[in-house]
Amino acid sequence: MASTGNISFFRRILNPFRKTCIMQIFNCLPKHNKNRKETSTDKSEVIVQACSKEEELNKDSTTCIKEEERQIARPDSNVFENQSEPSIISLMEKNPKRKKKRGKKKQNRNDDWIPELNLKQQHKNKLQGTELLDDAIIDAAQNLLKKQFNCEGLQSSLFSKMQFYPVYGPSVQIHHDRKNWLTSCLKPHHVEIADSSGKRYLTDTLKKQIRECYGGAVTCDPVKMTAILDVDQQPNRYDCGVYAIANAYEFLANGNPTCKYDNKEMRKHLSHCFERREITAFPKIDSLPWNTVYHKSEFIRQSLVKTSQSIYSPRDISDGILKENFQLEIG
Image 1 (cartoon, rainbow, N blue to C red):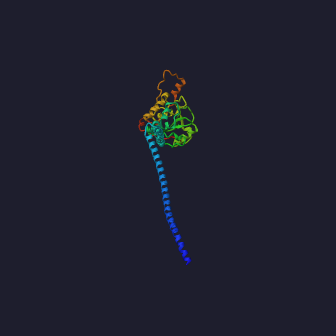
Image 2: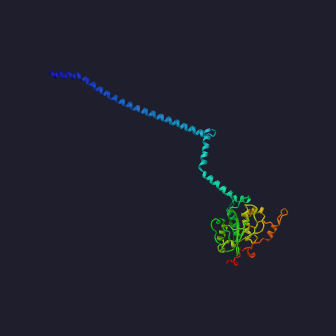
Image 3: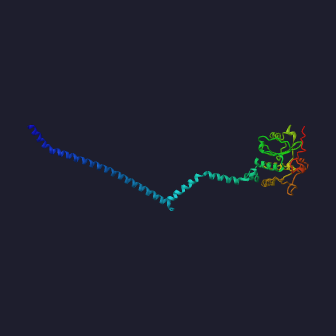
């Protein structure tokens, strides 16, 4: 019985403690929840503070950008001036090819003298100066002569370094031999050479060219089949091309290649012929001027010189070369 009494005695003592413990436990639970709420609010406050800082930074950046745009928009500001210069340079650098092409076109237009004859301003300057005529000028003259007289020959002077095509009728050809221009003409019985440099012999290069041009006529040694005419000699070392063109015209126009030319007017005359697109007779000295003295030997040479037989008949000048009576008499 004592034991049961003791047990009831202990229950009475522990009951208030039990209540207090339970109360403490319950008190602890809300306190823990409060702490959790407080931590969450702390986190939200930190996030809100971070967001506010980012918004402030964005506001500062936008204000800075707006201020820069305002400064650029102002024409008086230094920023506008500094930014305008590189923009123009960048535009210039974007299209450099177009500018170069335009420049080339202008140069080509200004450089042309007679486009259909492939003559440039440099060729005009050569005719006005004291330079040797090049192959472009010689070929331009030969093209005009070929159209005017409708004859064979008159092949491009570039074939002098390669090979000529053979012709089988009366024809004329301008040759290039050792920095010298000269003219040849195929006649019924022989080939005539008009060389204003005064040479009285045929070089190996010229022999080869004569064989190539007149292969159907010249079957043996070209020296035996050629006659070097006593033509007017050039007074300098650079007018051989002008004399060769003048002699080619005389051969074709039933003229006299052994005439005496007016050297001072020959280059000017050739330039005018190109501009008119027609080769005409070069100026000649018909009578001796009073202020010029010639030796007796010069008079004798001019009077005894053998004139060349033309490849044209006077009645056939309009038609070109008379081919019906042309027969080579070569053994």
